[in-house]
Image (cartoon, rainbow, N blue to C red; front, side, top):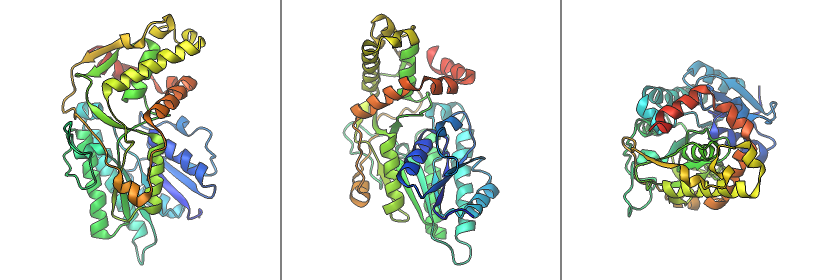
Length: 368
């Protein structure tokens, strides 16, 4: 039986989960992690390359397999679950919502059932079920509305956000009905290393490198609060260590910016990188920057997607006062680190950009 300091991380081969695993293992040499991941298109074993296999056990499996989850909890004496596993891309939820309901709702319920069975049987054992959610469950803000607080009414506007809202409610219900000790964090838009290149920042960054159109929905003035993934992971650890059972904590980056500005900053960063490093022109000859032209020339405006929320913003004051949470990265420092990571890890993103992904991008963006 494993050390009781072993934790289960679902979706640990995905973007945020892999960053959490790396950060957590680096911070505590006495802790071990079991990663449970189904390795769907956005999950990748290479996201965990270099992690000590003796401290990070990888299990290829589905969170909907309740018996498997129960077995892992028992075999490894796991008393903590950090639940990242989710379908998370809004555009995909519009074209194929079934997978989002199945994974995000049924998958979360499977985990809750397994935790209840193993942890609450008999006299019970100390435990924590931490659920990672999103600010999108709260709906959309007007330009002058205050940021989302934990007591905001849920008003999800896409199949993705509706599925996450449902999973949030299930976690809350298992706490109030069965006394499962849970915490939930609702985060703003993440960015950073290992992010699958369907999300805004890596998509725009790689399109700049390949000289492909930079598709901007509508007028580009949809506002998001941007959170570097390392800050998000620090917030989750604080919620695990200091959060009160049953409570929800909003984790934000305090970086509200319209999408148009994000794209402007990415293109300027790529232009500057090419100017500073002539070898990039040889590596990426189809980029406008390879010929001294601005990547901003690739911008194209496309029809807005259905149900596109206008603005998200997080009020992090509860996390600040109860957990001591503060973001370490500004958007400027976080973006600089992210651009540098993608330029230095071409092998990684080329490996994940398989044919099916390229076809999906071309169908949903480049041909519009």
